[in-house]
Length: 637
Image (cartoon, rainbow, N blue to C red; front, side, top):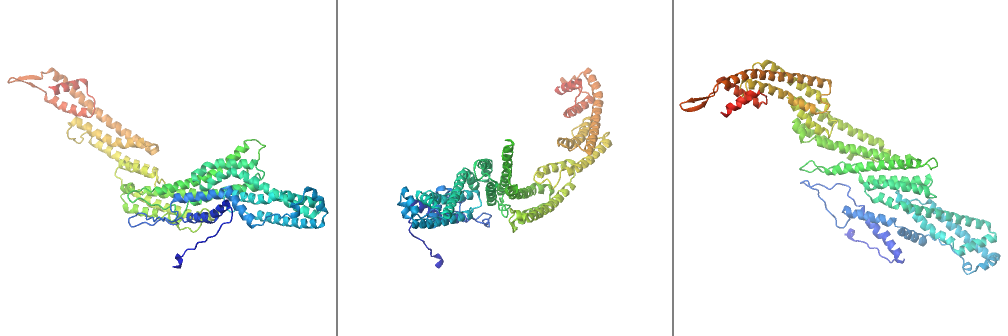
């Protein structure tokens, strides 16, 4: 029960309204939003028995991605607001640091004409020496503390916030050194000849002023980059890729104009922060342990989340490549300006070593995602239909679904350059498993080709594999099957040639055809059986380009010409018989009267030739003009 008791802290804010609002933001709202925004599930939602995802929304937390995105942007905008930073810095420093330069009352109440009197007054000089010593202590302490300060975050916005805070802190102290009363005390000490104290305080004032000018200058120039830095934080990867050229170009301008960021020791760390922010964004989007997981639709092979994950990986890879290429383009652009230009050349190891390595990891992840998806597409219904080995295909598919486990069980950060050897070992394990899967799948394909009964059937299978190979070409090279199909075709062609030679003098009778037309139809049938596969072979580029392919084509042409010669010979023999009979028939009367009726009288020999003529016409062969006219006339009668 005690756990249910809440504690409410309350109090009274004694500052002005602006400072009070700033404190409420800093101590109440932002911690609350940050807490809720950090409550992101680390595991995928559990699935119910029916395969649906169980999601339990919590109304008391920022559960929706849209709300979390708004909260993230709000926090980022507040922290980047200059007024907010100024109020935080001023409130924390002026109220707690004690950075107030005390001024004696006799100085504030005196006039410029009283300086000589103050110089001659020993007690007054002693008092001013003590005051100056305290100033020196305060200023030296503050400057030493500021020089120890570092940006609170590793990103480029941390650099802007750092210089804004320093500018705010030093502004309060530096403005006090410009106070007329402070300048009057310095003048008194100088006239009085108190050299050690005067020299120390003057040097402290000068150093403070230099730090102040540096902070003001840096804050002024960095504000031109702020919107780009902000986009690095809350923009999409595609958006960040788009603004990188402009960002690097503006950094070049700052490098050219600024009095402080024109040195390597200043610009290189800033560019390192940009690289760190890019890597941080990629880490936010890519979790190697979960990115390979997929929730497949129970009724289809659709796996859209894998496609989305692959696009994220490709965008991350493009992001790092754009970062390097943009730097090199700016460098080339500067060098084109002539020999008088400053060289845009910095330590590439510091700028690109880590990002280049992350680009390699992203490339590896893309390879892994594509490989797994290619296997999933390859090991589908088409492969089962072609090979007829469902059990073998299902066994290979189960091995494919186990590939993501290799990455889900890693115990190190794959994006860290220090873990490159461990990541290489993981990729080697993955590739070894892929080779085993390819071997198993390739064996199924080999067995499928061994069961082929015809060259055309083999070619149909080749067409199917042509589509499947788009997904996983390394499993089975189509070119390796060209020779097998051609050898099968030569065997079939040899069978047709033997059948033609042995039966051409007495071909098998074909129903519906007389002897002459049946012989032509029989030979044409053999020809079409040989022609159909060869036409499909010719249509595929490179199929018959080998020496063996040329030999197969030559044998086919010999067979086709022998068929053509056989058909022509049969037709010529038929024509030599039917033309004389037609002429003789035309000389005879074709009409006779029998018991008062007029009848058509057709010679029996000519009647048989007409049947052959009709059959030959169906085979689309030409006859002589007389035979055609006579046949049509007799048919009309």
